[in-house]
Image 1: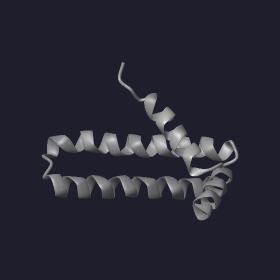
Image 2: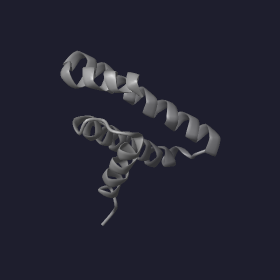
Image 3: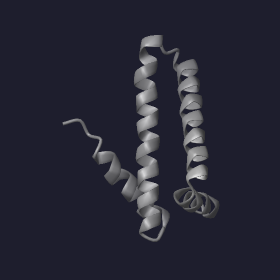
Length: 93
């Protein structure tokens, strides 16, 4: 957790590191989509939905993490609460 906080703080202040982090996030999305599609035998037409779902979950997590850090990075329960709150914004209306 300490390492994650250091990395996130560094990337928030350095545009070059932020680009690297964004590239890493995109690679993570690709990896998860590939593994899910292999595991579930997803049809090609399902891959877009899977990609959007994975990318959205990661984006919501990053937003919650950034907010958690901005608030002083308390305990893990506070991060989970922020993730749940941020996830609620994604509810289809």
